[in-house]
Image 1: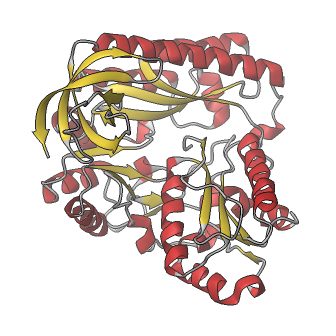
Image 2: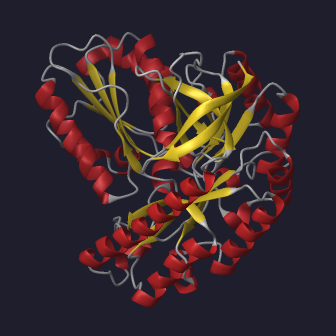
Image 3: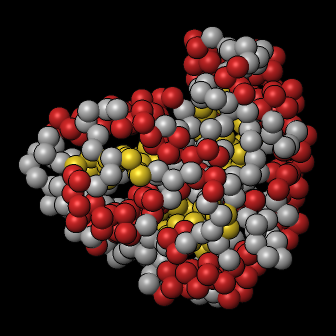
Length: 449
């Protein structure tokens, strides 16, 4: 399951005609990446006075927020074309098409094709109201799957789409389809181009990246892809991975994590629960002990490694004792960055038919998990004070400070009163203190420019 949080996107609808397409994004990093692909296609097509809403289907709350945003966009832009896409639109296009505020609904395959937006720009309101293909029939990837965000210092590269697994709580395979991987050579070419254009860190992303390669000739693994990238793009300073399934990480990837300095010591794990019976009812492929063994082994191979994880609170049939096992797993695996979701029943999933935990208990357990996660992050922040850290400058603030992420994904703000640092600089900093949300540092040594 991909991490799902609301990401408002860089643009909001404003009063008056829109000179360029405006986009609203809900959901995972993959959706945020795909929003930028759509922005490029829509802008190139000259699709103005349009609001494109990229929805998420992981939780009912994400879908509710998308509907709310659609209504707000129509109030603020009564003359704009409102186009809805994303996983929620793919799964239930008629539901969104029935909203009076919506002009068009397009699927997850169509949203990444340039010709879709060219058609909207030329046909306008006469374009079909619903254009959504059967995602399960799509077997090939296209160039947009490896398009990176070259204007960003941290560039995301989509290496695969879809998921072959069927977790009982998850509707996403029906929004994304089955696993479809991009050939290794195409990814290497794209990453090399991004680095030549200024990217200092590349993040490999997808729906289920540890399932990478199972559909390709020769069945290359994620580890083999990473090894080729590091070897064939020697100028890439930092490579980062998105969410991993602990039982699908191949031995070569584990070795690389332990040995390759350019592969960042931060792994985000799709754990979902810490109780074996709940994991079985979720139809997950790992056990509690699998998660513990993986974290222990990775820490043995890479002592500076830091883990993030997704956890669902209040899954159907979860008792207080089962929930306590999830709390304990966070401590046992030393999870530093915790993404918590109160369970949300999704129509037509097996878990929705199981005995449900009352909503107030789900919310309470989610709050308790978040508190544990916040405490873990604060402890990690405190443990770093006085140490050196390396970061890539991602943004330069008006107050003279700069912001970036450390190798272990720590958010770091660097005080730079002399304004010597610029976007893309790779620098070593001294960590001075921290707030609730970030570490504060000062420049120590310039590593590269």
